[in-house]
Image (tube, rainbow, N blue to C red; front, side, top):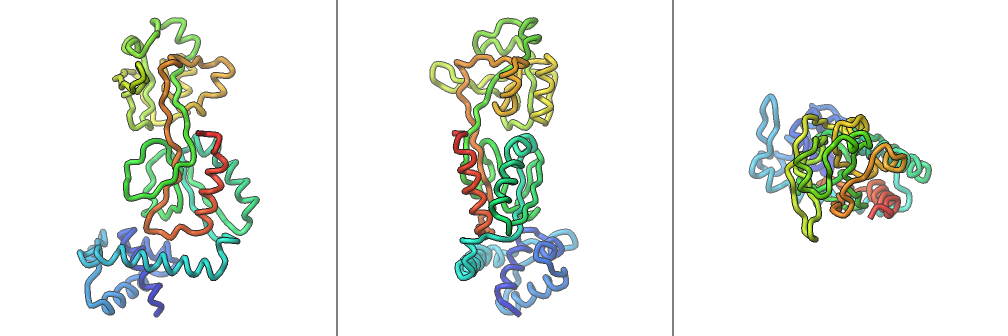
Amino acid sequence: MDRIDLLKTFLKVADTGSFTAAAERLDMTPQLASKYIRALECELGAQLFHRSTRRVNMTETGVAFYDRCARLVEDFEELKADVRQEHCSPRGQLRLTAPHCFGGKYLVEALADFSAEHTEISATLDLTDRYVNLLDEGIDLAIRIGNLEDSSLLARQIGMVPVVLCASPEYIANAPDLNNPNDLENHACIIDTNFKSQNKWTFLVDGQPVTYQVEGRLKVNSASGARTLALKGQGLLLSLQYMVDDDIKSGRLIPLLPDYMATKLAINAVYPPTRHLSARVRRFIDFMADRFKHLK
């Protein structure tokens, strides 16, 4: 019984909290995964997991064992990659996730070009605006925009995207004057609930960031949905600039308060710290950083 297989099984069960989920990720049966864990516990002379019908949780011993186990497996994978010269010819399956609108506008085309350069890499891309747990769902890499709240993940900033305030000409023609952020209280604001700040909008006033509470009857958890509401004259929209660039160029939306706009959000490539950063993941991050170097 390969000891590295035992350690990999332990890490995957710990990450997923399930023998079944771990077995699926490792392409083995749940029975074999359970056998591996029992063998490892027997060798160590200690229990690593509390088992229940719904969840598998690490014992105190398992928690203490986890980090050192992860480092051992990572060292082994790096050694194996060096021997195989994987860094020169990355291969295997790449599992990615990204926000729906950003992915559709930028990532799909980028992935096509990356795939053309790296023919031995297969990729699965999940475009979704929901928060994806990378460990639970077996994701290698996520593209996330804005401040990162989960400190357990590693990240590399690959770009920045400006935020713009805008509205349709029809809305502006019938709305009160908007000369500075204080006037926002007189306006209907479209709330994109994907923004963590939601109805707290930040502007630069006298060189300092100031946050304003805004109100609006319409809220939507979709950047494209919020854009549609703005195009329909339903209010002011605070949006990532790439979402409304074409509308602003065509005059369908008008940028507002440009002297007060200074907010930019980071575009981050995020990956789990416990998974060996394989050559294919590393190569894709480098590719995306170069691809988005104009977004600074």
